[in-house]
Length: 354
Image (cartoon, rainbow, N blue to C red; front, side, top):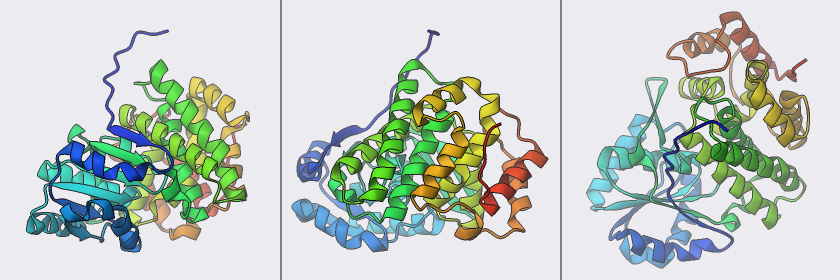
């Protein structure tokens, strides 16, 4: 075993069916007195229901959280925070809402409590991102890490199956790339393998019965572990492509991750033999990219970038942007190979490793 240093970072986690009932205690623990409640428009009513036990200290609601965290929405949310005299944030929803809470924490220095309703996993990371002028900027800062995360699988039972599957695949991508990160250590390796394994098992069960609470619990546990891995490990080609596709083309976040994942693995794993062996063991197949593609196909996830809004002429635009400000990656980014990857993902071809 190699020597390693592990500076572990994590919010306080409250996990399990019905755990949202502990919201009042957790808010009191934070010392919050005036809450701004964040959500997307679609989850406005859910957010109101969840915070009903602490409604006496809700200063206001902001229900315009938007995919890829546009700077214009950040400015609106900041005004809402200041005008209501809030002192902290409660975020209810998926990655869009969590991402907005993170930026408010970064800009205003305020604590956040996050209640995830998808399997994005971003609530466990110090990674922030904003989109401005068609470009998505990302960074890491410990100030954006939520103080508390309440994981209640009962809140995900109503999550539509397509979002359940794609956000689960999104979480798998975090840990899959983590397995070839230079910062990988035995603790994080275990988290990656257990997180991916939990989601690989849970996603088909949800496709068979989306009201399966045990599968929902397993998926949420997997998302927690995969998000924790992402917090501590570097991102590679997969995340660079998805940030570019999302920020520049405004493609849907989870769906983009779901489509790109097997193609990024096909590109990288021949240059990352240790990660390849670990993933083969977790997914139970020597052809990891093909197995991930088949999982998405069986469970109804989109398979091509074309079907989620990309145009063919965007392939070279994304290729060129991905070659700029590159993330560390086990295989060098080669212009022609990258264009082939994007073309295959655009058309939805099944990738594989020979």
